[in-house]
Image (cartoon, rainbow, N blue to C red; front, side, top):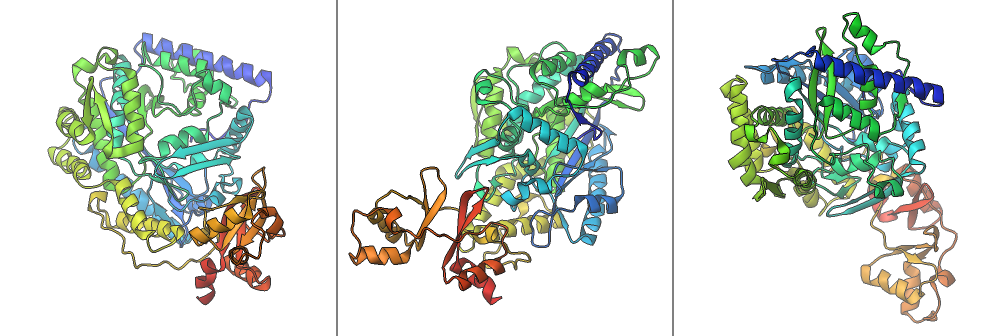
Length: 621
């Protein structure tokens, strides 16, 4: 997540100084390009591995800091939430066994993380979105207590001027308001870096945009959020909406969100990409900068371009242009941000090999993408890939392709050529590309998750199904098999809950009625759907009463006037609970008050209902 010593821009002086440094950095960048100061003729690769920390019952943990302290390795750093950490792998030159070297380091560091997590009663899971995240884990209690994250949340909330609104439509629908940027923490990625020669940067960047959709189709691994089945790679829509600071009017004016695929092919040089970012997006964070970039260059030093890097770090394009300094030399690279973490290390490395090979194998006719492909086709392909994964229908050079057809007949041959030209060991090429081909032919991460969720939910509560998916994801990762070889989860397995809350067992798909609806209609719906408890809402959508099966019986026996309203007969003194109330406490409340259900309230909104039937299993354990 970048530099931690930051502050909010609270006054015009701070703003002015930061902008001055931004402009100096742009001038320095232009100077270095014009005078060929950048490293070229060598290609290095690098990666960042984000991962999730879970408790013994497979829910998000909140102990990233003690685990990080236990690990005590500079390769590791914090992330936005207390249930995430990140590994920064060492860059290696693209040649021969470089992918095996990177895999060995990643596996070694993950072992170190697992050992530290175990000492803190936790486990490490690689997944694009942790299935067991709930609204409770998106409260500010779970934000990592670092200046950067706290400042970022405060500033983005101030720019938004209201709560963020998330609305996703897939097989299920999710519509929710949230009061922090913590939804961003649901996204866990395996971010890829590829060094690019300065004179080839724009052609490579546009090619990276063009191939993003096809590459994503075979990498999707995040179909679930808050128990809903949404996009094949839900992270794409979630990340965009989770930190969208635009007001509705600004969206209508075509202002770009901070998470964006872009709107056109890049032109000029990397300087023009940075200039556009500065013009499009207000600076969110600031820090004290004691470096004058141009003065450093005149002294013969390489500047770090701190202001430009900080501003760049608060923008989240799916392909990001990056400046860096290594070994005393400046370099340019492209960061691929759309690949999810998991499902296994082998799958991640295969994704890396596929993307790098495709990037290096670019045919010459794609040097100027504007002459070959409409940018809107590339953007459309990316959105379709996120929605539908390997079932997406893609447009390439003006023709329609199925995902399988495009990958097998067009892109995989380009990939293999790019890897061979980069002098990668032929055995590694065959090994990793077979993993990609098996995913195309058999199944990928999203398909494995969805098929298991649907099967498990036939016999188990959603929460139980999600915890089983998380558990078996962990077990399969430990075995080291790619996801195409993962077996289905046994449907008879049931996990004991170490910390059962109401939110883990409540029903969220609710039938509700309004207080002025006819009671006869409401009780008829209850009878048709075999609903024994129906919440009643007022015109503002707030809980104001409850209908029970007793009302159904009375209406059915004609002991009630069919013209009465729900308000006339409902129970208006309703005992409620919260999603973080323990099951034990909920059982006690229902028994003491001789009631059969508790509506569940969060932020003054009805979000579910828990019945005595839901919790009886825990009463017997």
